[in-house]
Length: 190
Image (cartoon, rainbow, N blue to C red):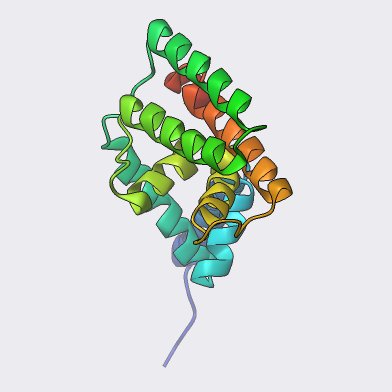
């Protein structure tokens, strides 16, 4: 049996091998590019997803699924009058902290929920709401989780005044980001 290949056959095999290697390199580069993009967009949220799902592929699939779900929500920017109204209410919340830290925290929670509801977030479903915050406001997603953890502690006095102050600061960061001076399109472009 003669296994000698002709020059055209060697060229075809070489071209096929080059295409396979080029395809593998392209897939690898695309995968790394997507990973870098998701890390850049979500920062600590990306790392949290990695820890939660145990693998890069599963974590990235979850982040992409959240993006897809959030894109279907009717989220929109506030008009300037709404933004001004909510900003004035926020000033009142902050002024109440000295006399009633827990009351101010409850007001902050209600106000942030009102802003989010006005923007179209599904505030009745905390998981969807958290996903919306994570996708559209990744810089303050951790603030959202921290405020929910502190404000959901049962019983009077469960959180210290310092913890309540920290929670109010988290709410302020979340409020400022969610009320947004920049439009939704500008934030997505950034």
